[in-house]
Length: 124
Image (tube, rainbow, N blue to C red; front, side, top):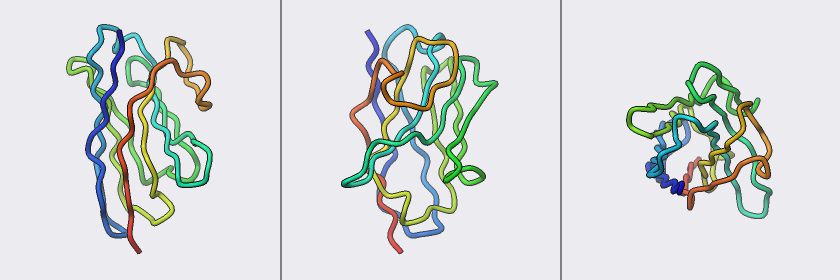
């Protein structure tokens, strides 16, 4: 059973930083491809970043490239999203997700498990 729990969200001023964490209580974390998504009010859920099983491959949405860094610690069953130089348009609920597939994926329906989300609010 996979259970994902996000933490680390909050309110921050534009230009600030936050670090999100996603803890997996299951036993399949190291064999799962992982991703971060976000959803702003009135908008569809969008891909933010993805990471391979080993962590050697990562992929980012253009809107966050150069500002966000995704990483994982398989020994701790935890994935991270370091967010720097935050902008008001980064505001939304951030979700972590896992998938059994080998390749990185950027669309929500390709992920099998989801966390409950953590709110990130960036004020201008």
